[in-house]
Amino acid sequence: MDSFKWIWGYMKKYKYRIFFAFILVLACSLTSMVVPYFSGVVVDQVILGGNTQILLPIIGIMIAVTLARSVGRYSFQIILEYVSQNVIFEIREITYKRLQELDFDFFDNNRTGDIMARMTGDVEAVRHFVAWVTYMVFENLAILVFAVSFMFCVNVKLTLLLLCITPITGCLAYKMTSEVKPTFAAIREQFSRLNSVVQENISGNRVVKAFANEDYEIEKFSKENVAYKQRNLESSAIWEKYLPVLDSLAGVLVVIMILAGGIMVIHGSMTMGELVSFNSFIWALNNPMRMVGWLINDIQRFNASAVKIIALMNTRPKIRNSKNSIKKDRIKGRVEFKNVSFSYKDEQVLKNVSFSACPGQTIAIIGPTGSGKSTLISLICRFYDCTDGEILIDGINIKDMDIRKLRQNISVAMQDIFLFSDTIEGNIAYGVPHATMQQVEQVAMAAGAHDFIVSLPEGYDTIVGERGVGLSGGQKQRIALARALLKNPSILILDDTTSSVDMETEHAIYKSLKSFYKDKTTFIIAHRISSVKDADLILVLENGSIVEQGTHNELIQKKGYYYSVFINQFGDFDNLSVKEVG
Image 1 (cartoon, rainbow, N blue to C red):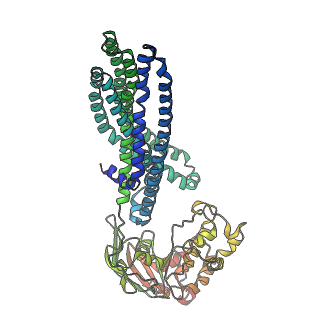
Image 2 (cartoon, helix red, strand yellow):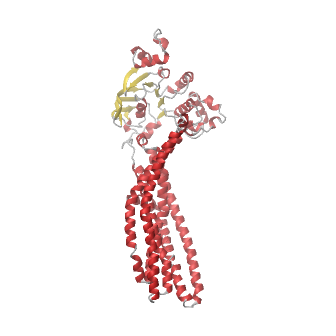
Image 3 (spheres, rainbow, N blue to C red):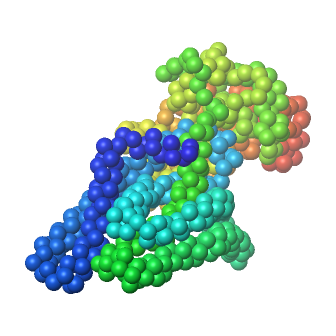
């Protein structure tokens, strides 16, 4: 019932339209009884009775009613389609807005295919329910009630005899409902798995081709596709068990009507016209009995989809504003970590990290893969909350700051670069949509991207492919860097931003960036010593802890992890002084 209450919450604003549509459904159901009723009248009074004068009026009434019924059906179908489209529009808007509110943890733990299934197939199942299933259930019930009422008026005995079949139909329909419900949940889950495989394959098609692994991907898809087919066949097996019986019971009605009705006509307890009317009314009993199985399937499909959409809508982000969050339009950028620890899925990623950074300073973070470098800067942006300790910005715990305002003052050039299917200008200006072309070119020059951009046929109007396909790794990094710079943040975070460019280009980029560093707190994550050696403070992370910190020269003199990395990258400089190698 929760699913029906939920969908009514969106439908009730259109309750007057829905009420009018259902009045039309009721009227159409009632008028569908007119033709069968007058068919019997024609037989008794015109064909057998010879009263031809009433034939033309009866035909006129039947034609008028049929036309009116057609107009009525068209009208209520259009009304309910209008309602369904508006309801689904609102659900999509709310669902997508909720997706934007959810934090990294949700996307870490949910497959993209499952999320896409909720936004597409599940939403379509809800639309189908609102636009078609609702009126079909009501129409079939109305037709059944009107038909039984008319049949009672014609002949009570024969009607009661025919109604003996309906309890059996109701019992079978109930059993079918209970058995088919879990199969739709299984179908929906498997569909999301299939969707995930396709999405991953499309996104990673270059990797697949690079490793000549097409056969493996086809096999992986086939496995999920077979499982999806199997889930549908399991559901179909239930239909096969019940639908033929339900259809057969509907057919039994015709047999009973012909046998019992024929006997009654022979014995004079029923006229031939009444038997003809009964024959015409029999579809009104048959059709609901035949449709009950299919409608149950659609209702259960809706229920399975609605549960998934409701679950998404009810998901709340773990990273939320406090009740009295502090909103600062502009922060200065003083960052302080106080004994910060962070655990993810029972694994401790950071352990008792403490340091401070002031505006105008550049903090470099270096360390082996998996040491927690990217996690550390994710905590500054509050993509995750630290498990222990506290992070202060301008002396305020970031948990007490408005999340949106906090992130508006931070700009990140992420390690995992994502470019939208848009122009290069649009990608650079993503964070500042109203930026002038001059501003875009200025940050592109600072990021070392301007020269290669203007060399493209369309220049800044060049459309880049999905995820930046069509550009080299270094070009994508420089566009991402320009995007981060244009935001003019108080805190600038560069996560391995120049790893795909040569050292000469890297040197030129960092030289041009010095003017941007003046009043900003800058964090640089890198593996190259050349990227971090000029930083005011270098943090060396290993296994989630700061094992070394200091300037380039100080760390060289300590001859620890930093020194070993330096030697590996620049060779044996034992015979050189620190000044020469620095």
